[in-house]
Image (cartoon, rainbow, N blue to C red; front, side, top):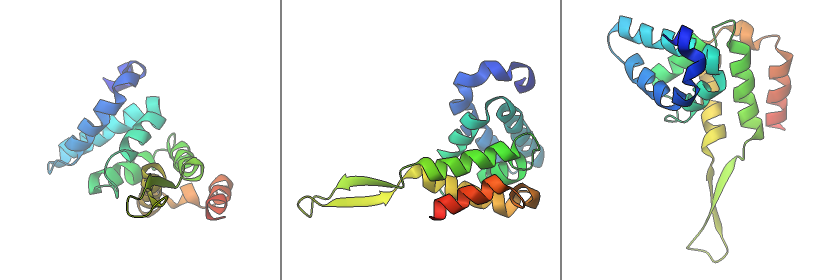
Length: 151
Protein backbone atom coordinates (compact mmCIF):
# COMPACT_ATOMS: atom_id res chain seq x y z
CA UNK A 1 0.00 0.00 0.00
CA UNK A 2 2.75 2.49 0.94
CA UNK A 3 4.65 1.77 -2.26
CA UNK A 4 1.68 2.74 -4.46
CA UNK A 5 0.04 5.38 -2.27
CA UNK A 6 3.17 6.78 -0.59
CA UNK A 7 3.05 10.19 -2.29
CA UNK A 8 -0.56 10.65 -1.14
CA UNK A 9 0.30 10.02 2.52
CA UNK A 10 2.24 13.23 3.20
CA UNK A 11 -0.39 14.58 5.60
CA UNK A 12 -0.62 11.30 7.48
CA UNK A 13 3.08 10.76 8.24
CA UNK A 14 2.84 12.27 11.74
CA UNK A 15 0.17 9.75 12.72
CA UNK A 16 1.47 6.77 10.74
CA UNK A 17 5.01 6.77 12.15
CA UNK A 18 4.01 6.36 15.83
CA UNK A 19 1.61 3.57 14.82
CA UNK A 20 4.35 1.83 12.83
CA UNK A 21 6.76 2.21 15.75
CA UNK A 22 4.13 0.75 18.07
CA UNK A 23 3.89 -2.29 15.76
CA UNK A 24 7.69 -2.44 15.49
CA UNK A 25 7.92 -2.87 19.25
CA UNK A 26 5.87 -6.07 18.99
CA UNK A 27 7.51 -9.22 20.39
CA UNK A 28 6.39 -11.02 17.22
CA UNK A 29 9.29 -10.86 14.78
CA UNK A 30 7.15 -10.91 11.62
CA UNK A 31 5.03 -8.00 12.91
CA UNK A 32 8.10 -6.00 13.87
CA UNK A 33 9.85 -6.71 10.58
CA UNK A 34 6.71 -5.82 8.58
CA UNK A 35 6.31 -2.50 10.41
CA UNK A 36 9.96 -1.57 9.79
CA UNK A 37 9.63 -2.50 6.12
CA UNK A 38 6.53 -0.28 5.85
CA UNK A 39 8.46 2.53 7.57
CA UNK A 40 11.29 2.22 5.04
CA UNK A 41 8.81 2.32 2.16
CA UNK A 42 7.10 5.39 3.60
CA UNK A 43 10.49 7.05 4.15
CA UNK A 44 11.37 6.59 0.48
CA UNK A 45 8.55 9.03 -0.26
CA UNK A 46 8.78 11.32 2.80
CA UNK A 47 12.19 10.88 4.45
CA UNK A 48 12.35 14.26 6.21
CA UNK A 49 8.83 13.95 7.62
CA UNK A 50 9.44 10.37 8.77
CA UNK A 51 12.76 11.34 10.36
CA UNK A 52 11.21 14.33 12.12
CA UNK A 53 8.38 12.13 13.41
CA UNK A 54 10.95 9.66 14.77
CA UNK A 55 12.92 12.51 16.35
CA UNK A 56 9.79 13.81 18.07
CA UNK A 57 9.46 10.53 19.94
CA UNK A 58 11.19 9.86 23.27
CA UNK A 59 14.81 10.81 23.80
CA UNK A 60 16.94 8.76 23.97
CA UNK A 61 15.14 6.59 21.45
CA UNK A 62 13.57 3.31 22.47
CA UNK A 63 15.16 0.12 21.14
CA UNK A 64 12.76 -0.23 18.21
CA UNK A 65 13.21 3.44 17.21
CA UNK A 66 17.00 3.04 17.32
CA UNK A 67 16.64 -0.05 15.17
CA UNK A 68 14.47 1.87 12.70
CA UNK A 69 17.03 4.67 12.42
CA UNK A 70 20.24 2.66 12.39
CA UNK A 71 19.42 -0.68 10.85
CA UNK A 72 16.54 0.18 8.54
CA UNK A 73 16.81 3.78 7.29
CA UNK A 74 20.58 4.32 7.49
CA UNK A 75 21.28 0.94 5.89
CA UNK A 76 19.14 1.70 2.87
CA UNK A 77 21.29 2.83 -0.05
CA UNK A 78 18.64 5.36 -1.17
CA UNK A 79 18.02 6.85 2.28
CA UNK A 80 21.24 6.63 4.30
CA UNK A 81 23.08 9.69 3.01
CA UNK A 82 20.01 11.91 3.15
CA UNK A 83 19.15 10.71 6.65
CA UNK A 84 22.66 11.49 7.84
CA UNK A 85 22.58 14.91 6.18
CA UNK A 86 19.23 15.76 7.80
CA UNK A 87 20.40 14.70 11.27
CA UNK A 88 23.60 16.72 11.00
CA UNK A 89 21.80 19.79 9.66
CA UNK A 90 19.27 19.56 12.49
CA UNK A 91 22.12 19.46 15.00
CA UNK A 92 23.99 22.38 13.45
CA UNK A 93 21.07 24.65 12.58
CA UNK A 94 18.87 24.26 15.65
CA UNK A 95 18.93 26.39 18.75
CA UNK A 96 20.79 24.30 21.33
CA UNK A 97 18.97 25.52 24.44
CA UNK A 98 15.51 26.60 25.43
CA UNK A 99 15.54 29.52 27.83
CA UNK A 100 12.78 30.13 30.35
CA UNK A 101 12.56 32.85 33.00
CA UNK A 102 13.87 31.78 36.39
CA UNK A 103 11.34 32.76 39.04
CA UNK A 104 13.95 32.36 41.78
CA UNK A 105 16.31 35.01 40.41
CA UNK A 106 15.20 38.39 39.14
CA UNK A 107 16.04 38.62 35.43
CA UNK A 108 17.54 35.12 35.49
CA UNK A 109 16.95 32.38 32.96
CA UNK A 110 17.03 28.62 33.12
CA UNK A 111 18.59 26.90 30.14
CA UNK A 112 17.59 23.39 29.16
CA UNK A 113 18.60 21.35 26.11
CA UNK A 114 16.33 21.93 23.14
CA UNK A 115 14.56 18.82 21.91
CA UNK A 116 15.50 18.92 18.20
CA UNK A 117 19.31 18.91 18.45
CA UNK A 118 19.22 16.53 21.42
CA UNK A 119 17.05 14.06 19.50
CA UNK A 120 19.21 14.40 16.39
CA UNK A 121 22.34 13.71 18.44
CA UNK A 122 20.75 10.60 19.94
CA UNK A 123 19.60 9.48 16.48
CA UNK A 124 23.07 10.02 15.04
CA UNK A 125 24.45 7.86 17.85
CA UNK A 126 22.06 5.08 16.80
CA UNK A 127 23.10 5.46 13.16
CA UNK A 128 26.79 5.23 14.12
CA UNK A 129 26.20 2.20 16.37
CA UNK A 130 23.90 0.26 14.08
CA UNK A 131 24.28 1.64 10.56
CA UNK A 132 26.81 0.68 7.92
CA UNK A 133 30.31 2.01 8.57
CA UNK A 134 30.62 3.04 4.92
CA UNK A 135 27.95 5.67 5.53
CA UNK A 136 30.27 7.60 7.83
CA UNK A 137 33.76 6.66 6.60
CA UNK A 138 35.00 8.76 3.73
CA UNK A 139 31.96 11.00 3.82
CA UNK A 140 33.42 14.50 3.52
CA UNK A 141 30.07 16.17 4.13
CA UNK A 142 29.69 14.25 7.37
CA UNK A 143 33.18 15.20 8.54
CA UNK A 144 32.66 18.89 7.67
CA UNK A 145 29.32 19.06 9.47
CA UNK A 146 30.70 17.36 12.58
CA UNK A 147 33.58 19.81 12.63
CA UNK A 148 31.13 22.70 12.33
CA UNK A 149 29.09 21.27 15.19
CA UNK A 150 32.14 20.90 17.41
CA UNK A 151 33.40 24.42 16.64
